[in-house]
Amino acid sequence: MAGRWLHLDWVQSLLCVLLMVETVYGARGLSTGAHLTPQFPAVGVNKTPVKDCRDVCSLNASDRCDFIRTNPDCYSGEGYLDYLEGIFCHFPPALLPLAVTLYVFWLFYLFLILGVTAAKFFCPNLSAISTTLKLSHNVAGVTFLAFGNGAPDIFSALVAFSDPRTAGLAIGALFGAGVLVTTVVAGGIAALHPFTAASRPFLRDIIFYMVAVFLTFTMLFRGRVTLPWALGYLGLYVFYVLTVILCTWIYRWQRRRSLTFSMPGTPEILSDSEEDQVSSNTNSYDYGDEYRPLLSSQETTAQILARGLNPLDHRRWRSKSVYWRVLKVFKLPVEFLLLLTVPVVDPDRDDRNWKRPLNCLHLVISPLVLVLTLQSGAYGVYEIGGLLPIWAVVVIVGTALASVTFFATSNSRPPKFHWLFAFLGFLTSALWINAAATEVVNILRSLGVVFRLSNTVLGLTLLAWGNSIGDVFSDFTLARQGYPRMAFSACFGGIIFNILVGVGLGCLLQITRSHMEVKLEPDGLLVWVLASALGLSLVFSLVSVPVQCFQLSKVYGFCLLLFYLNFLVVALLTEFGVIHLKSM
Image (cartoon, rainbow, N blue to C red; front, side):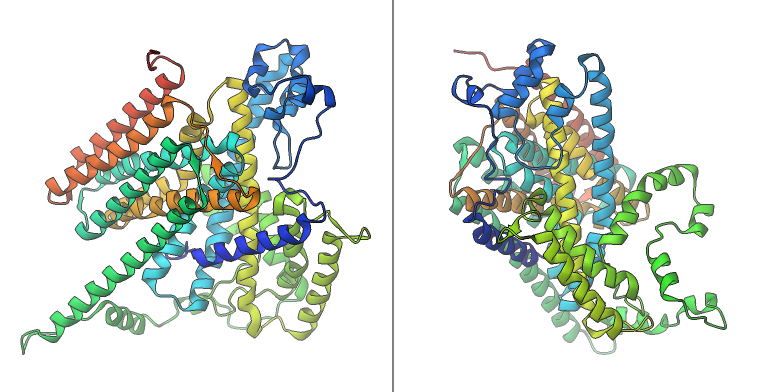
């Protein structure tokens, strides 16, 4: 888990870069996803009122394509594919079930892309950045670890908040993931491995999370988010980080003081750092030396490039199960593309994962990916002075840097500036995740139009399940391996980051782009059911855990699982109108 780290400062730096580029090119007529205006026919704009896009299924099959193309509510400003036009204009009405099936498979594959990118490329580079900056474990844990675990949630929220029509997806996903993690994951950990929870961290995290939920509840009631409100979310997270650091410092100070005033003649207890140092000294022997060949042979440049681009380890392939092999086959195209475009720095290896031909290739391809994924390629195709597109300039500059690096370095030793590749890999993988999250949001909105479902219910089910499935498996694995306390702490610590930074940064981006406050369009009673369920789950844990003296049993776990099932039933009944408010 220590490898899955992210720091808030780099996200803010990325935000500043985006805003700076938008300021430079926005005045010249370059349209971004937030500013793009669909070129609808004059008849559709002037004579046809804007209707809910979900009304398309109530029309005749022959009129659906024109409705999608002329109704502004059906327009998608971001993303590479127009999924609604694909369903209603390129598939015959009889093949609508086939189109939906293909979209669902593509949705699952996008979730696979998000997981692979975050686990194998995004988080390792964050770990390298943390090592380079020499951050303490406490600071890195509440920033890098939290953002590494919640990267899909954060980027999905940023994309969803960019459009008021899909803001319900972000609210549903963040709240839905919160209910899922605090009930299913926390309850499953207690059911698998009863344990004693850490009292002070648990109370600290759950109180901060309840404050965050209350702020979001108030935001939904107001129906709008202003700039001070968005900054308040980010400020609350900064205050949370400072609180964690202060509590850890106080705990260590008390521990050192107790050791200083220990009774003479009693053996002194080693601190954590001393224990780590002793263990590292006693285990300093590198057992990997036993498996190295006696006569080392130098690999050629071509062999290094081929090995660096090979995502398949044949020895692991032979020892794994059929399920792992099938999943690996689906991952191979994604892993190959990411190996080709995203550099990864590993501080734990002697060569820091330096591969000269591949890293030189990254200097050309990674910046090209950056400009072609930023705002769905809107910046990359812009022509400077009407002569040369930006992507061509990036290729020329990248080729020059790659040529100099190739001839100035060697295959055997990483250069001194190799740590810069971690920042390049971080930016590239972050934009890959953002691109995949954009497509996920667009597909979910299209499925909502087809099935006439609200964005909120799609967010709390499909989007929340897809983004949280990795955390579910990792936390359950930790519990089975005998670390339930660590897994339980991650349940409440990580989602604080998701809701505060997801809502705060998403609304801040939208406000700075449009220079207007963010309008929220909650989907009726369902949003309040969702917010109430999350608040009740937190109150239940806040009361029941101290009552049990922080000794969590299987009964507590099964109660949380039953709570989530009841919440899901109530949410679906509310969505389909079985539960509703009586009109006065």
